[in-house]
Length: 412
Image (cartoon, rainbow, N blue to C red):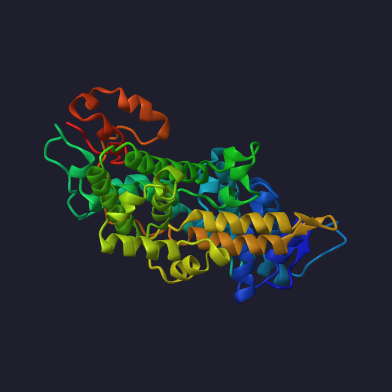
């Protein structure tokens, strides 16, 4: 991998399909290329170039390859297409025209194989993989999977909602609902959303809907908790609310939901909340000790050194704090040009790959909690509507805000 620093797209595809399919170099180049190529080429363009390599040079070309070399190239192309189709299926499931083009090419090659069998061909193997994947159906949202999770712990919810206030809710269940709802967004983040700083550029924001949703959700959670605290007038009530919020934060941390943990801490660090010295001074020693620990663990000092160590040892399921990696990606983007001497700066793609892998590595294992469906409101823009809904006639006004946190709970 260290040998490929910059190259033209044709040379990258040539290098990609020259290996014999064995060794770390082949696998690493494959992983980096198929995760990052969307920043410099379209899926259709890459497919056409791989097909051109598979077919070999035309008879009148000055460059010819022998049968053994062409056979190895075809094996490499098939292995890459199999890897691409199974590991980045969204490229095919989200683009019907591209998927049909790929399937038509594969069908033609299958027919050719029947009439002109080729020794050691991987076309039949590729066709079986594609057929098996397509028989499962198109891409299914992990959100639906979380709703249908088997044997989840029973939700801890009030049997009746009349007269319910925030302090009547269970901290553990609020943390569960926050976590599974947030995991739904995190699990949908695609590699291309994390390239070219798409989340921060007006022209590219359409490429990063889930990253932007996580950022918006972070700000929303932070705002909701800080608003809840400062809108509680009496010290004893405010202390109780703060203790509950700290417990919710504690549960999120224990669940390895570091994004929500940081969002809650951000709300507690807001200037309007931070200045409530008497309120913070009245909380229990356990809560105060936990806050002190969290401020150390989640500190931005030395580029989040302590938090990075925690993330490195965290076992899934987990939702990492996105801000750490968005900062890293910003440094990579600002410090490295897209092209070097007119060629693709592949070294930059390797650096991006190393960071993106860290962001997405927890996507495969969901939390074993049931997202109680019957959604009411889940977006910050709906808070005002929620405050004016008929539900609020059953609740004290200050309870309306926190109930927005309790996403997807059926209010009867």
